[in-house]
Image 1 (cartoon, one colour):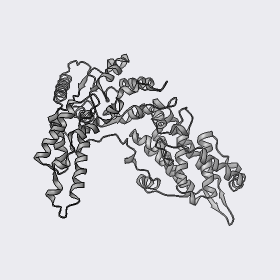
Image 2 (cartoon, helix red, strand yellow):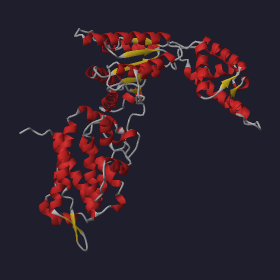
Image 3 (tube, helix red, strand yellow):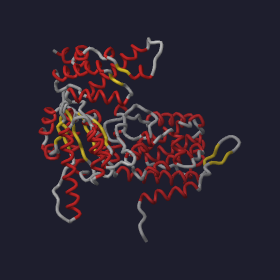
Image 4 (cartoon, rainbow, N blue to C red):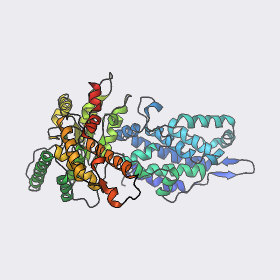
Length: 507
């Protein structure tokens, strides 16, 4: 007889449990818990413990779910699946707390004792149990359980479903099992029925689509390599980067052809270093690169996940590993983009966990090298020091893309694109004033010059000036609304002072 795997066994167990939903008998003065209901609760909570045991053996899950936790709400040790399940059940319970009964209080207390203490009420003590659930002592005990066993998420939400959100992020097949357990708990406690998972999510106010990392991109519909390359080639400037990407694509294409012919290939690392100042398109290029790798068959999904030092490092023992594992889990199949990566090892505040983050990152890059690309980005000199600070970094990152400052002409082209995208037309005199501005800014550029970000800020200032000018007019036509005039463009010296204000203040 074929042995049934644990997941299938747990899934099948829900059928038998739901056939026994006759938990109580009602008398004139109180609700009486039946022995049958005790047995059903025991079976269900044991199944939950079986799922918890499976999840606890998954180190990636344990680290990922702990990364959801507000570290101020627990000690520094990693918590287990049981802890989070109890928190999730209390969160779901509180949504219907205005309908709380002696039965619902008993159900929550039973789940707590079973999941946290591995204790199961004895069906032989039915009379004592029925007396207990109506006592003030029991009520006080339950309130303490609810208060001490609900956790806050990293965004300080106390209505966070840790188990569900972690399994959604990991695209884990055990999500439906965890969801069924919460559904069964609500049936036991409040006799609530849900037609499907969507109805349960609606009740819980849990939206799986919003669980995704906010910095995680999704591929466009009907995406192709030709579309990606068209977008890349339409970017202003970046000629050397475009050339480097074209050469990389040629290499990857030939590698594929060699593999099809049964020939040996050299090992190619997709991990890449982006060097250069801010506002030069590094994030945009990383997003395009993830799609290129996907279409060439070197990554399975092609999404981009963005993070930085804050997204990887925590202030408590064990939490840094959890945060790194969480973002890695979200990035598998695509590109993990780490901006200002040198900040991981630049510590101005005494001991922290930057070195730990780098160590874990290197291991995960090796473990997931067949379906993960990591792109680290930042200023040129600090990034070189960062890569050379660790032999592991030096060996895994052997591809470098150099992003240069945009020229005055390219800065003007970027401004023109902002205008085109927003239905504005620049007058000839305004164009001349803008050219003077960009030449002055370029001449005084330093490593921190913001390039396209500076252009965007100037564009928004021009739009504001235009609004202040035309609001006084009695008749505002579409032509007036579209026109940016010389009057709307700040004086070059004024823009220069605004851009370099911080540097002058430091001097």
